[in-house]
Length: 326
Image (cartoon, rainbow, N blue to C red):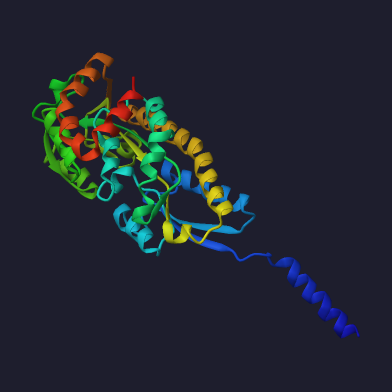
């Protein structure tokens, strides 16, 4: 009798200690380190999902590119071998041409304009194109505004770009933008950037302040000009193969968590951008603002780039976005 009682109590204890559901697990591939604005956004998202699902959904983040670069892990999501990632939207332009609208130079004047477009019907319209490619978008987070550094002189007017050897990524729209501003594009991967600037193989480059600081480019550049010539948005993605296995309630939980994490992540991104600017100025980097009038002149100089890429993006989409910027 005592043995049976002990056995019964043991079964009850086991039942109480085990969840009444099967835990759903997923891998989240993150390109940047955990302390970056991207990494902190992912950590907040993972925390929210676990708490709101009562531990039913358990996501493990892999920071610092441990699972590969944006292109590789986005393909892994399509194949179903990785469940989550958060690339910059530029990564999607090869499969969804309409996303190239977000790479138009001088598209947004400020964060408020970016949020209006991304968080509204236009942003959702773009996300609606992703499931056909094996991906599901949850929200838009912030990488931030790209600013120009160089070793020659401050960039305060569009004429100051003239003749500079300026680092470019492989994307054609980036190369055409640099040409339109009067500089010479030199395609370079990030790992080559510091040495190329140090040896004056190139004169300058453009990335968000936090990235400039993280790469320690202030050690090999003299000037930081707040050109805000491009805006980078991250997009938390889910593998559609994984997504389709979830219940509607679980899918909504992921969407809500990504949107809630968005406000937190964006604030971290803006705090890091300002903190990086102050830190680099303290290290001797000369920082200059670009006036609204000169910013407008730069925007006018790249209009041929807008004209060049409007047909492939779609004239209606370009009009729709422009209408929200006035």
